[in-house]
Amino acid sequence: MAPHGPLSSRPLPEQGPGHCRFPPCPFVDTRKVRIPDLSFLSKHRSSTMSYIDGFLIAVPNANKEKFIAHAGEFDPIFMELGAIRVIECWGDDVPDGQVTDFRRAVKATDEETVVFSWIEWPDKATRDVGMKKMMEDPRMDAANPMPFDGKRMIFGGFAPVVDLKK
Image (cartoon, rainbow, N blue to C red):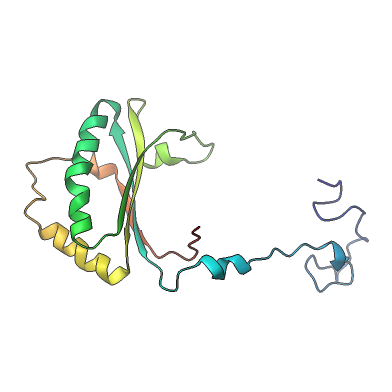
């Protein structure tokens, strides 16, 4: 990085009351301002965006195989109800943060691993119908408990704003 900022190789004039940091500005050499080419966003972005349900949970390390079996039993139900993709990710490189982090978010202990999961739906309407049917499905039996503490699960629905694909 240059000593006077990432885009400048010379000092800026003294900053007075009329100083601004962004073009158009008489104090900035616009030949050195880099504006990224974002045209690739429109080329690879789908015309209709999907809808995502995201989940963050703490799973006891001893229950990894039970968790995988549980996901293998219940994730296909989401697919039957309209989901187009279900991903379950076992934490592999989940660092501790200085202010907050994934582990603290779900109050994971040293004997637990953070799992990050999401369900992709074609749209929010399909998701709303699918989740309602899931809650009414007799296969969602309380006698078949989850292999993790559901009270510490964090979840939410998300509307994608950028979707890049190759």
